[in-house]
Length: 250
Image 1: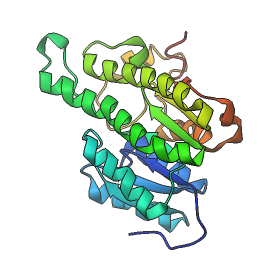
Image 2: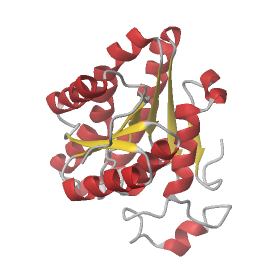
Image 3: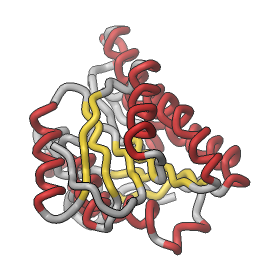
Image 4: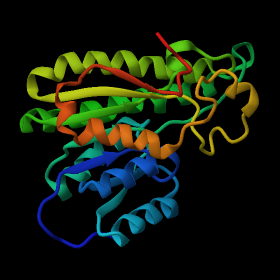
């Protein structure tokens, strides 16, 4: 399903947008007037539901399948969007997975799969979109990291390492692209109420959060929308903005 043709819109690509935080980001950007490319890896039906929801409320969207942990698929994702939409104004690197376990028992495959998607996927998509944004002399890249990339977490060595890597990648890209009118920032959610957190020991976690509640995907999406679109965000780059209820204070 695609949206009807109309006047050109700014284009946002959101990876891992078929559910959870990625879905809310896609919906939020669409409501703000961007045409949204809903990227997914396996959940075609769920991605189609997101596209349908956007279009039903007057927005514009289409879906593109790609496993961004794979270099060629990430490059083909960006190529497909450019062939169809001619430009990319916003890239939200959201796709991610967890494969939790204590490090002494962690399988190498569980380590590598998390690094490949959560970190290398961000690199693949950012590199692929960079040439276009440089030509446009305009672009906003928002990477979804995590507070565990700042503080670590027992049982999540692979996830923490991948998200810490995203922080370093964000800052390096921000320095490389700043002179070309491209901002690069990271959003670091704390514990957000999604399918990925539903089985966690809630009371123990809440004790570590000063605001004493989990965040919502919509709250994260609102922050991403600000960084992607608001004129006030034009002077923000290379930053890691925590949205965690006060869990990590530095």
